[in-house]
Image: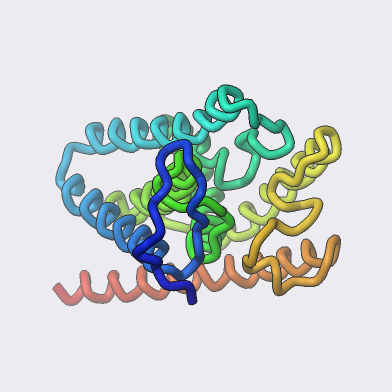
Length: 250
């Protein structure tokens, strides 16, 4: 585990001299702040009128989308833009746009599909991050804002609105993700990119590092996706049942 170096200066918005280390003090502080802000959001807004809650969630989803999109003009301004790396085509990067649709149309079906994508994908990104720059570099701020608050927003209907998952949502999520992956694979071949990490593993030490090489790690991910989806649904079912029993006793 890397310890936080007190002599190391934090990055500024456009200075990336400080490298991010997973499981450092910085990493744990970021996750802690994210959890605290999420809990505050749930608690402070749960008694708001439904329409007011919905407007807030749409606004926050738009903000996350803009935070993600700002990477393009910034990299263009800095002269570092690369279409194979800087377009918002990684799974977690374009999910804020899906959330706008969820809250605008109040689509439980779309929410249920991306619920699995966000919880499983962003959790992996938060606990085994691929970001290489430390705070307060603009890309680090973008990375953490998107990956932490995607989880916050997708949990909101479950916690405050009591939206429910169904067993069929497991297979809907898997089928939809495979269809999306096929499209993204074609895009990767077209622009020589690796969006959604379909053509090779991501850089750095991540969960992917333990998998076999391409294309076999994709098959491993398929199996893990199925197992984790059922596990996530099982955890959801357990706590839903527990909550229902407590509500009945009251």
